[in-house]
Image (cartoon, rainbow, N blue to C red; front, side, top):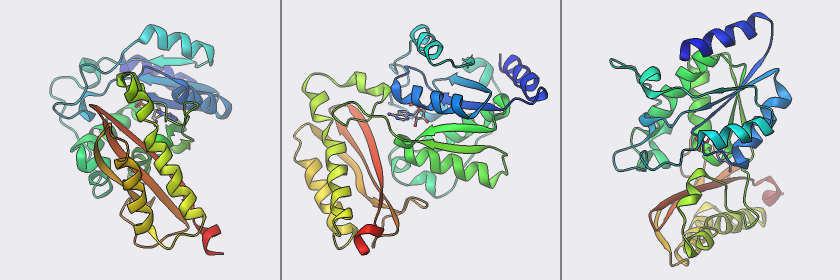
Amino acid sequence: MPRIMQETSKRHLYKGKTIGFVPTMGALHSGHLSLVKRAKSENDIVVVSIFVNPLQFGPGEDFEKYPRDVEKDMEKLRDVDADILFVPENKNLCPEGFATHFIIEGISDRLCGAFRPGHFSGVATVVCKLFNIVRPVRAYFGQKDFQQTVVIGRMVEDLNMDIEVVTCPTVRESDGLAMSSRNVYLRGEERTAATVLYKAISLSREMIEAGVSGPEEVKARLNEALRSERLVSEIQYAGVYDPKTLLDLNEFKRYNLVAGAIRIGGTRLIDNVLVEAVKARQ
Ligand code: AMP
């Protein structure tokens, strides 16, 4: 199966076509489809992959129950004119004897990486394999998974991969909740409570744009806003970070990443915004 995909890409490349690539884990929503639409507008051929990557799930995470519905996904992809859907099976992508793993030092261990050991190694390893199979000129990722875009960007640069990594804006529900395949886990009042993350992050953005003195004040208010929602069962991290290094900021830079990861009941949610602080200092 990867071999067929690779041959297909080779034929398109031979004809001088550009390939845009959107890697996903399926259970597609409008966030994924926005990436496909962007890829369609910038490339001759768009390849979408669906692969629930076992390497990026830790023990006790939701690999088994992760939502899967390839039939429905295919319909959605037809509606946005995706050209090729690649759905590799684990036994073909990571066959017995598979032994190669990437480590992207530093940035992989921060933020989400601190709570999901091995996650970004699993992401990078499989994304690299998919890049080698699909051979895109551009690959599309969502800002919702900001750390993932930083890790993939690092890998592409460090390994001289000739691929443009394109980051697309986060698509949200009308109440601000970032779309995610995992939102189906939210039950009843948890769904309403989940809006607290984007609300709190938006409040941080307003504080920065209004000229608040420094990141510490923003971080304190952000955590307070998250704690005020009784259904938040855990705040894994919430603060203001350097968008390149993902380290905590002591003072504002021109661009500041406000990001958080929380649990509502058993569901883990992440979100972020990039805030330009220039306005505040002028
Ligand atoms: P996933 O299927 O969750 O691995 O996501 C596949 C791609 O879609 C990743 O690049 C995600 O960042 C992106 N994505 C997921 N949710 C959203 C969203 N709400 N808005 C934009 N991109 C998204």
